[in-house]
Length: 137
Image 1 (cartoon, one colour):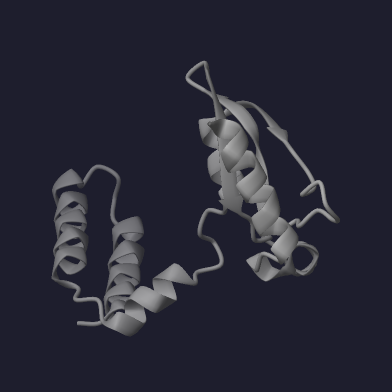
Image 2: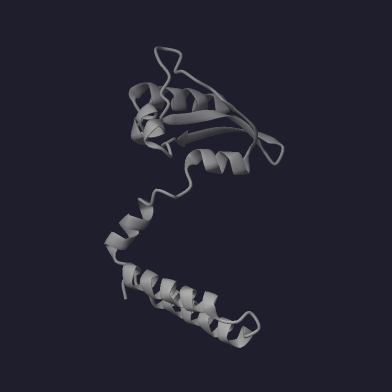
């Protein structure tokens, strides 16, 4: 069973699960076991892996930074010419320890994607990342 077929079956089961009486816990658990079985039996093809990797709702670098680091300060520019918005670099605290953060940034909307060059770093972005990596040591 491929990913699309599995997702369709899971959606059908979830619809049935929502229609049962709240007091019928055994039936609800049975539906939940069916969903878990389908998820375990689903074999992902190489193309399924590509589709999962390209899902637009996947977390972006900024989401991870917001969740993991306190007091994040973004640093801009490569000290030679320009700033590359596709490279998200800065300083932050991870469990109280100061760390340097280097990430490739891609926007969530079309406007953000255009501003950040669709996550494709330019030479100034690589220089900025290298500068901060050297600073970390």
